[in-house]
Length: 212
Image (cartoon, rainbow, N blue to C red; front, side, top):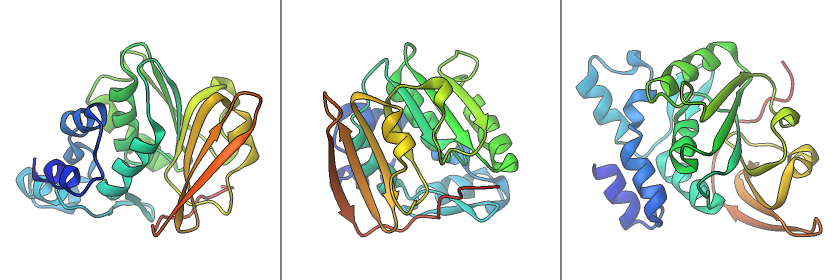
């Protein structure tokens, strides 16, 4: 897998757990079949370190960006994770691999067509059947209270700011990783509720849609 090797060499993939998730979850399984003439061509396309269209004006994120965000999240086995803007389901499956059989990933996608596409893709790995992933078609701009509090929250679309609701739905010592405009922000909720924020600029994301 040249993609994984390149991401390791470039410093995006660092920890054994995230590297293993990238090796286990095949990005090809989350691409629309109409992007290529056959499976072999689709596999070649999946190896490119770039965002690719998945329909409805949305994309499957660039692998380097996903790796960077997952490393910041520092997922632990058994974590309860909220995945906002799950799209193709690729990040959802990566998160599910990271949390393991005792963890839970609640994935939210607001666009019905992408919700169905992502649910089908994640289903290829039996994460839904095993109860590790719960997929919901809804607006995630206010988080998802039914599954809160969360150990980790990941957003894959850019907001104007980190919604207060996401912070409120986070466990103490929990982490939110989300794009704000063209930066990735990592927010950690310390004991007592103090929020530590760090900005990593220089990224491009599709915008977070607040309303239908």
